[in-house]
Image (tube, rainbow, N blue to C red; front, top):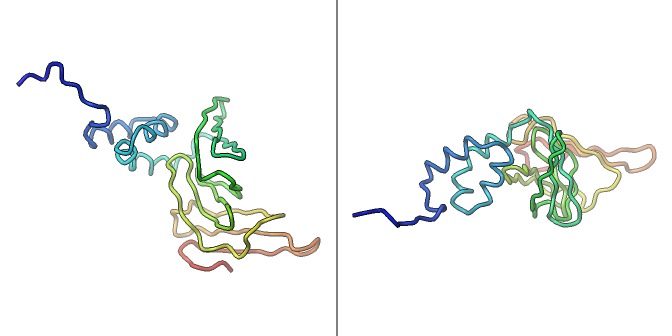
Length: 170
């Protein structure tokens, strides 16, 4: 049987080959690769997990009122990405590629490169104002501690603390 003239779709490539291709891509290329189709997204999951821990190059994420975000490299290169998870959200803190995000009363960690999301227990307040936040290590670490501090009055601050893996804010 001759294979001459037989055409196959790019989405029909074997997962093992797709994984090898994904492993060799840079950050932006990997993000584009994931967006091709469901099979390519799935095949790139291991490479995406490695991307989550990248911290070699600083990136700036600018977002507005919709899900279109601009990813800006320290060299000034701009990439436009559609990130629905950021629509209406407030980024409270970032660390090693992870964002701490507050949106409509819920708080979660989000990695815009891999689209990994880690939900946190319900935050005690539905809205935040006069606040600042930090987390001690990537949310995949068992040692991660999240703090959100809010100003109650001119002289009073309230500290909310969560250890990863726990179900309640303190």
